[in-house]
Image 1: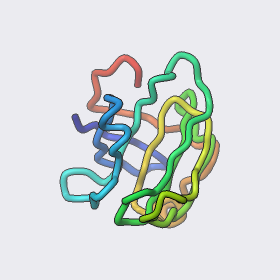
Image 2: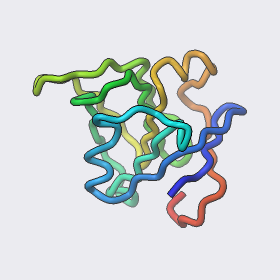
Image 3: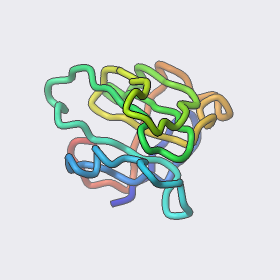
Image 4: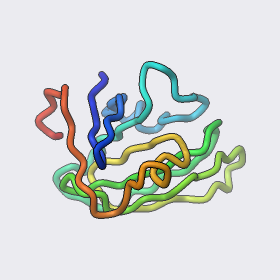
Length: 127
């Protein structure tokens, strides 16, 4: 499923990931295509927000990782580099949603902590 994600006057065509398998796979072995330019992870702990952690194992492109709580950006990791070993850096944060964008996008578009994230073209009650 694809939705529109609005951040700082910019709209991203976003692929929605909800199943544990989709969330586990993320951008591993993938590149952004014309079909989408962002991934949105809907975490299992939507009603009981706790810290989660992402890593770049087997990713092939650098990513910006954005943690969102109650539609507000709580943490951004910029230009996270791909990793091919089992000793990859972890990127923890709190939030019930996480967005991955191509590396460097947040700095280029001036996306910052505290900004509000909106969604459209979506029927999910959790967004």
